[in-house]
Amino acid sequence: MKPLITLTTDLGIRDFYLASIKGRILTQLPDAQIIDINNSVTQHSVLEAAYVLKNVLRDFPDGTIHIVGVGAGAINDIEHLIIEYRNQFIVTANNGLISLISDEKPTYVGVVNVDPNLEVLTFPARDLYAPIAVHLARGGKAQEITIPLPKPVTSFYLPPTVGDGFIKGTVQYVDAFGNAISNIHKSLIQEVGNGAEFIIGFRQKGFNIKHLSKRYSDVIASERLALYNSAGYLEVAINQGHAANLMGLHMDETVLISFL
Image (tube, rainbow, N blue to C red; front, side, top):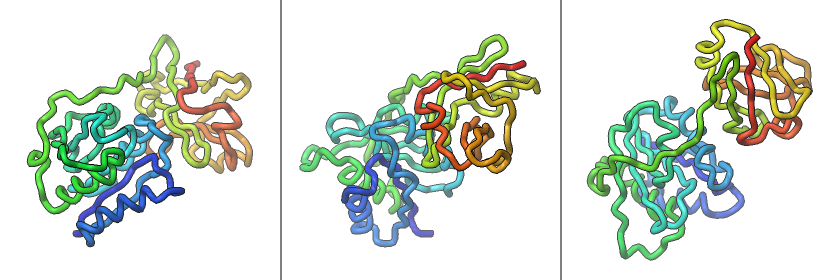
């Protein structure tokens, strides 16, 4: 199987930056398969990058190498990591990303030994992460170019709050269709609600949702709905519309579930 390397960045597609990373990889490893997961992550949003990567990791085979070029800054501004997690590798900055992704302890976390003679310091995804990915794809060990790090930086993003008859969460991601994905998982709703009916409410009044749908087409065009997305999170959408804009459901907005 050809080496598989993925990219999750906030670089967009307007500039040459993304192509430069791919060129650096292919120059050293011409048979590499490079897959773009998402290069339109909101700039510097580690939370958004974590959500994207967490929900695709299970779809990739063992040995896949994931470059995450979000929240890195200059090469000498922050530590850079190689993380072995569920038989895959994540190359990223020490910015809390792994704490948002992992449901279990990573097999290994190491700080990359950065060459002090490296001339270009401002583009870690190309000048540091790409060569690391090539090293790993050729069968190199993470331990050969890192120092073990027992405690990487932890993100303090708050989980949903559970109270007497309610769950209070937030919007953790807005996709390209304007669908607002909360941080409230189906399993938590089932655990707290124990089968009870509930109403989904928001900061803006008049948009309450009383029924869960199974698909977007369960409601007429321009009608709001809620469903569990493919990752099991409660998602609020408008059939053929943009829920984030029309309902004010942008990142970190409140989503409240009240059990009846």
